[in-house]
Image 1 (cartoon, rainbow over the protein chains, first blue to last red):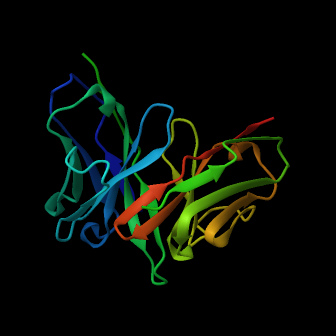
Image 2 (cartoon, chains in turn purple, blue):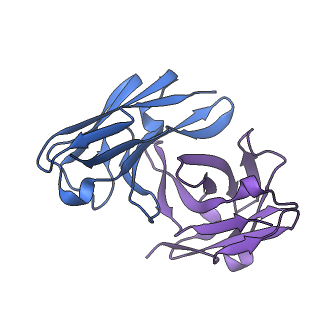
Length: 122
Length: 110
């Protein structure tokens, strides 16, 4: 069974750093891209970026480039999203999702993590 | 960069009624790259439709997707109580390579 299990909720202060995780299981972790999606309170979904754990090739949304860092450790089947200096506006739910490219060339996010709530408040 | 617009913002319907949700792109999107997701309160999004018209595994056949180019539609033929949720369309664009979600349509109980 494919599963993406994310790390638990975090409460941080502005200026602090943070790294949240997404552990994949039940499939070949190195063979599928993993994306990160932000959902601010009461708002919609925003794609942040995506990583291919096989070679750590990473792409960012222009809106998030330079604001976050996406990485992966294929030895433990885990992808990460990190901030060096959090802001109150980073308060949101963050989801990881597996990207699938099927044999017809169709692209979609087929499995999602349960989400990690990040709260940034002084 | 492709922008997705969804309408209506909110759709108020009764169980058993038909729901028609629209997703419009600012420029042509490959049907292969258009997907729909359902999100219920407190839950992660769930894939419903991919390739504009293919149902994901386990999705009931009352859900159907159609469209091409810049206009796509998600139809729920007869609303069940569990279908009241927010629905997002999403596309992949290759220049630059990025994914975009629409703002969502909330289907609530009338």
